Image (cartoon, rainbow, N blue to C red; front, side):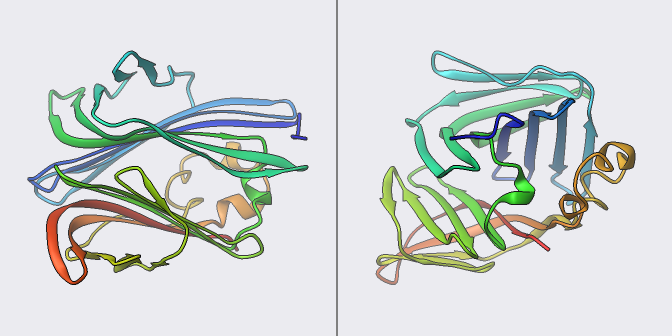
Length: 260
């Protein structure tokens, strides 16, 4: 049984490059009671280490997946993610109060995004789609860890929930693990370890003062606990080990979200 009063479709897309650039895009639609909203936004870490960002609640097109590629057209640029691996999908929560359906449509892709100012970010990318019928302020967890690591040879994705409904999921090249240790420096599971060796902060603080700082009237429509969500998001280089031996090096994106 799911809640008829809440529906959120949220797309997350990213690209990391060998030069240290990182692009993250968000596209979402939400319906709740009499509220119907669209959202789009991006964060860009350029090669000089500067952060650029923009967001809007204006009606916008969601990413479109067709054949072997995903395209996303926005007012701030256009991107294409070309499939290199098959999708991963998990029902993260299926309760009477609502559900959370995680669909990683592109665990790894060859990706390129051209900004409105002609800047091009090109590298390895990732894309996922979340469908929620449970409001985020009712999710029965206290801390979320999520991240991905991409190299030419390996694809690693991790999700950990802490709190009343704990969950651990790690996907290595499509193989699923349900036990491991996640923190903001390492991911350990089986005989594998991912060590994050450099760190650039993409965003840090409550989402009411970061993501939605310009939208106080809109945020006032939702419970205060949403604005108080604490999010920390990083990117950088990482080294991947198996049984203590280096497998390869790549780029990661990692986040920690705390419910207050």
